[in-house]
Image (cartoon, rainbow, N blue to C red; front, top):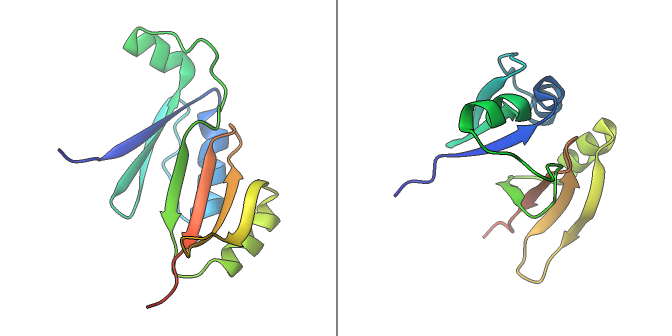
Length: 124
């Protein structure tokens, strides 16, 4: 089995495209229904709630970024990323701080409320 992608269902695909372009410094194909981009080997799909419900045939009852899932990214350096995040005006959830397991991490929300974690492990 191979884990390949995460899909974020959203009311506003283009708003998330803009956010993730700024966050990762990449260019993402603009499409207000469905778009996908890669960070390392992970594919992240942004999918319109309306289209997902229509195409998949199920209802997202209380859809709104719940924070019940965290999407994590390992970084080589975190302090400059924290400054960049502050410049983007993100909502910080926790950190930056060094946790007991050794990783320095910062948790923040994307515009839909999904929790993103940037972490940096100590150099060995």
